[in-house]
Image 1 (cartoon, rainbow, N blue to C red):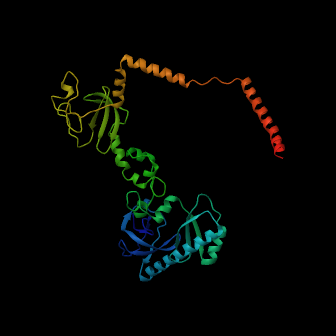
Image 2: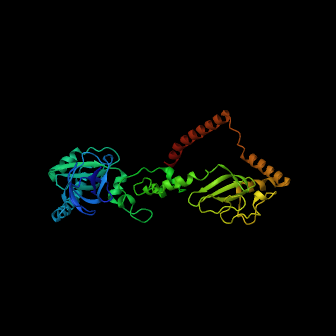
Image 3: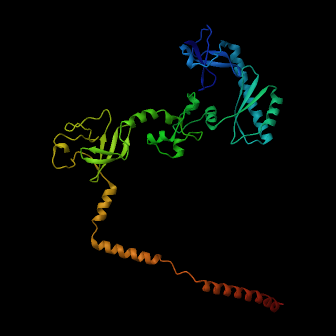
Length: 370
């Protein structure tokens, strides 16, 4: 076990552990720490606590000191320098005509290095650009290519929910998101509705993925055969939030069962029947010889089965008329007989002859005019 504090360098950035080294620190304090990039300014977000050796990355660096007023003034000055560097970087990129987009610029707290973050479709040869930037700023220059998700995290914006995007507000790290999460939540698979500002799947799909996964494990899958009080049927739709399961019965009706935790049980057969109204003891099909559907139970007729029954009940005269109509349509659609090769050759010869005659007639008209 080792005592550590959590420090964050960016808004909604990753939290890094440091050794407090007998300093009295509280969450919200500014601290000066040493990192791989050099001396950096950060904010304490996790107070002193004990963690195992497996949770830290050795060697654990110490907090240099608590930030004072001069450190805050220097931080503001570095932010102004970074904005000027951003403007100069855009001018140099346009001068060299490079296919890259500058996203953000950061300057280290010790003024020894400037980092330019950019996006590009492929690899970019920016060696000449680095030389020009180094000549202007007289310090170490680093150009780092990032992806579209990191770009959205740095710039920020509003999502389709109307709130600031999660990655810019509070998400420290990106977690994997798959299209399966959208399917489990019965969301539309339209890319414009499940994609964020970055063009990738929204991070919020992962927030409730485990809850939907646990709920679906307790419910039957669509297509499974299920035994109900009204008979055996096939599952057509499942709602994991309410626990409702739509079952298609062979007789052509659709019933709704409730597998939710708060659903009352049937008094007769100890099953959860209709969501809208429960089956009474006298009306339960388990206690009646003739199977029937009670009036209290709300059912919906199956459209596909109803259409089949209507098609079977058509009289014989209508069938004959339909057959005659189909025959007439087939006759109209018959293709015309293909032309023989001899007829085609004759037409080509006629066209060539008429074309030659027209060409011969042209000079005659010019002579008459003259």
